[in-house]
Image (cartoon, rainbow, N blue to C red; front, side, top):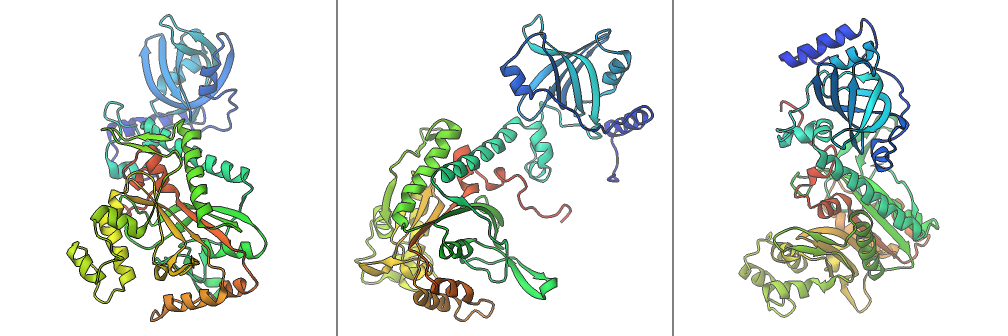
Length: 479
């Protein structure tokens, strides 16, 4: 047990628990419920005998009568405990219970004189004694740091938080179902890799003692999923946890969830259609609408088709400057007030201008296409313009939500791109096995990655990524 100063309530609960141990188990065992509370309320049959388990959330004693509320994962119902309607031992046990205790009850459904659906309790079983009092309902759990750190408590006392995470689960389930119906196969790839590839990011490093080998937590599953295309799987996806040893912000968590999808014989245009369909379907299936109301007249419309613009078109639209026509891109960027590192290439500066001036203005779903090829080492280039990549990124509410390519499947070009990418970086290496896989032949393919956490933020109108991750990364207590 954690040693700390016990307040009066905590000490009283521990004393009750000690007393109960003399006659029973205050931490019970298996309990067979006949219903969930939600199902029972949806098909309420007065007089039916039921068994349910849950956490006691309210307690009101009136001498020979006790009223209590119990809730399970999806519902809440009132209990009526009357002296003479339950054994003396059962009534005495109920008198010793506290809000927060987990109980199993058996009884009969009835409607009170006030018209409230309730259970007349005949038997009660204590399943787990709560040694800590819950926050008072009129105060709730408001401390944001505590909510994230003690998510279990957040879920108990904040109904809207539990509903948000149930919505998250349903959204992911709807995406999985949609892809399964389209003939995609869900696969699993390594989370621990000898080379960190598939994206540009700083990895978390570890060490595999059995093989005496440095390893990395994956930053993306891309290169392994494309190996499966080589092997003959034509439509695959993975809902994956990936890790990037970078900053924490309202949009970033070092451990995050995304879905990566690959389809042989397709390209990035097909991936645009898939992105529209999978997100709009998730919204419709789970929320019942493709319109997300953000208040103050701001509505996000997820119904297809979405806006499609090239990077240069978007820059011209927002800033009024056509960077394809200026004499000097660095000078034009400076005049726009955009900072960039000295020695940056024109392509890198164009991207800096886009990120600084355009991203935040992309509120409705917008596909940005035709990225500079030099910034996209895993993408095919356009057939009529080798300086432009067949790539898009999706932006909604000013933040990136998805990224996709027509996947590069030429092993010689891919090797050259990898060499340029790792040039001058001693801690980086070319993934030679991936090149070897390409040499056996990978079909032309479209690849797509969607940030699940950010998508949940969008669909649940959450402003911070930590609101949609059950256990976000935090500093250890006391640091």
